[in-house]
Each structure stands twice: as structure tokens, then as C-alpha cells.
Length: 234
Image (cartoon, rainbow, N blue to C red; front, top):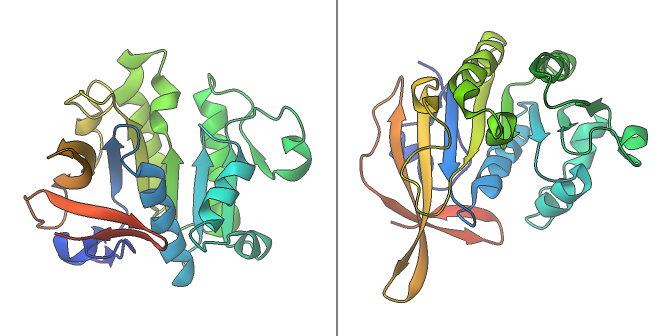
């Protein structure tokens, strides 16, 4: 099975070559664990290897997303201009100046069909190979019983169009789950990011809970967020 390199230093080795192509992976974790940086680094690495990518911004203004990425040296504007990268605005609903500057806008988050239509169009326009939805939890925050159903609908679109995807999932600090009832059964892989106090110091780590199509490490691995992104250190 073809593997997709993550771009996270040390992670491909843990996954025995990367994420299996077309897998839909839940990237789950609490606040401050590095989920957005992880997913943006994944997309940036794809762009460096001629793999067009899409970032769906559900919890941040598109301008803020671009600024955050540029802090790591990931300037996505040239790739947007060349039609190799698309940023879907699912945050502003088209209010303010977003409707003047953003090409892809989700107007109503309560309308999953509209969300999927915009996503599908962006994938088609740039022939996307990688997709990040940050965070997918927003789509079922007020309707948790539909969490698994929404995940499965997204998976049909993403895997069906050949994309390898990360669905960012928010969990509370002390939550043992993955950000929604049953969502773990609707995805191909789960990467859990944690932030724990160890001897008076906060340490970030990750666990690969599952990954269809590849063997992987079952150990906890610690990582750091550097000026150039995430790096596995042990």
C-alpha cells in the first residue's frame, strides 16, 4: 500500500513509512497539544512534494490561519495563487470582508450538504491530495448523537476523491475519548496528542491508537514544537 509522508520529523518511522494513502485519520487532543500545527505541517509537506492541499478553517479566521502558518516559514499564498492550495472559510459564514477575499466559503454550518458541496468543489478545482478539517468537532458540537454519522459522510467524500485526510478533534483536558461518541469507529486511524505535567514541567506526547493498512508503534512518543514545526524526540 502506498504511504503518504507526514512531514513530521520522526513520525513516518513510527508509522512504518507514513499514513496509508486515502486514509481518514482523527487527530485528537486537548488544548495546547499542537493539533493545528501538526495538521498544517502535514499540508505544507505535501505542497513541497507537489501534492495540492486543502485546509478547512472552522475555528479561526482564514487570515489568522495564514499568519500562524507563516510563523513557521510556511507561506501558503503563492500556492493559493497557483491553484495548489485552498483555504475554506467555514468560520466567518461570509460576514465582513471575507466574502471579498475568500474563494471558498461555507455559509451555514448547520447545513452539512452545503459544507460537503464546498469541500467537494475545492477538491475538484485543485485536484487535492491532502485535506485537513480543523476542527471537525465543530460540526457536531450541538448534536453529538450525529457525530459518527457526520464522520462517515465526510469519509465517503474524502476517501472517494482519493484524499489522505486529517480530521482535527477537540477533547477536554481530562477526557479519555476522541471527541465524539463513536467517531473512533468511523475513521481509519487515530493519533492522540497529549499535554501532561511531568515533574513540574508540561510535556507533549502522542500515541498512535490505530492505523489501518500499516503496522505502527504502540509506545508513547514525546515531541517538541520548534521554529520549523513538530519534531519527535523520543
